[in-house]
Image 1 (cartoon, rainbow, N blue to C red):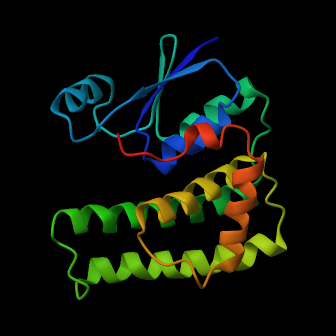
Image 2 (image 1 turned 45 degrees about the horizontal axis):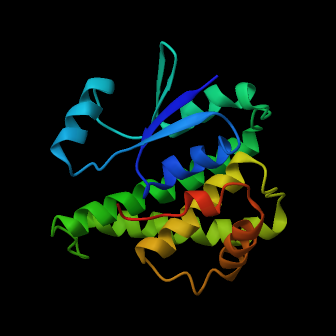
Length: 193
């Protein structure tokens, strides 16, 4: 069975799914969200014009979290526990805040006095602190989806040079270990295309 994944080479939400699908039959339709033709195609597939999107025959699935849950039984991945779901929510919250900060910066609206920006930066800092502590206390098996998601996020932060991770040594060690262990890591490295 072949899946079609619509996304970009620079999205941490897309990369985690590509890692989940590593070794499976799937096609990545790489999109540039700044390109009007890709924007039109994306709108034809999704009314919210947001990646990733998965097509599986006649089934279309939106959002990385829902796509992952849809794929778990199909790719032999066990469902997540409540603790793993909570960890994934933390990872997603940090990623969402970082995307917001990045988009505001690109739009020239990144005034650090803005309460929205302050809230995003607070979420990023406290979330990363929590994960930096949590990663040494819990099982972040590199074959589990939360680990794929965390490794994708940390690599993306480094790729985009969004913030310094110097204070989060456990996270840096984790992504270095992931780079040498996770199947498909090299093939899914971030790249601007």
